[in-house]
Image (cartoon, rainbow, N blue to C red):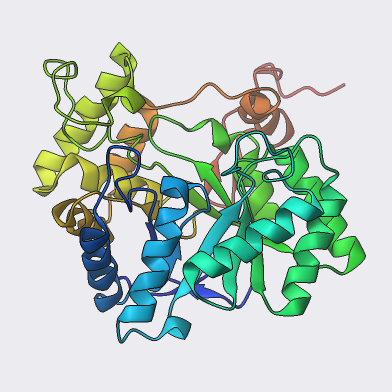
Length: 359
């Protein structure tokens, strides 16, 4: 597979690359990240390889990330319409101003205008609600987004980091009102964060929403740099994001390393290949601070894990899911004992005795 093996995002006509270039690392305003020159080089490399999907946010490096992306398209010969540019709203850039952030109409409109100015474009391909605004009715946010779509300033709508019930509510309201639907959902997903398999991913699949995993390498912990022996001494300015890890986490790394050694690839490549292959996943967000990190990520497009390798990773990283998701296997056994449905073999029911007598 390559970056130009495009896929449709959710239930829409928007075609995007299987890897989306995340730009949270663009700009050094927070003390880490890539310089504008390095960022532009990574953008060029991604686009030259056929990639077309770029993700940013108003809050990334205090708005500098958006400006770097805008400067790139303004100063290069790259046609802006060839790219699918997404950005996010919700986070405030002005402390003390209650209407500078959130998802109310006033905040939404001014954040959109500011992002358009920094991106130096007259439209945003996909506009993401970055977080759930618990103080604003979702109808107000959706109607504001619909107005932006109607005005031509936004093409598609996405949600990020919302609970499943709120996403479901938003999508249902949008369909009922005839407003633009949600086509994609960004959420954290990796071998070390699989709780989204309980509610969010099944919900997205049922409602025609494409899942876009972020942090597929768990803030770099699955990059291959961290082992039991060197976790506390790895030289990285983002070590604080990794934090203390458990024995179970290192067991996942052991399993990744075994598979990586068999395939002759890196641990990060295997971790990304696993995420890319998951049910419901559309385009996966990747990010880098250096060119070598970016190009290393591309290797995962050429790796297809065997069923045995996937099973091994699934087993070592098996999540504890909240009710009723964790009850799903037993409920299937009770309803369809001993059958095979949609390629899944269901175990016998523990409620049925060996006798064939049914009263």
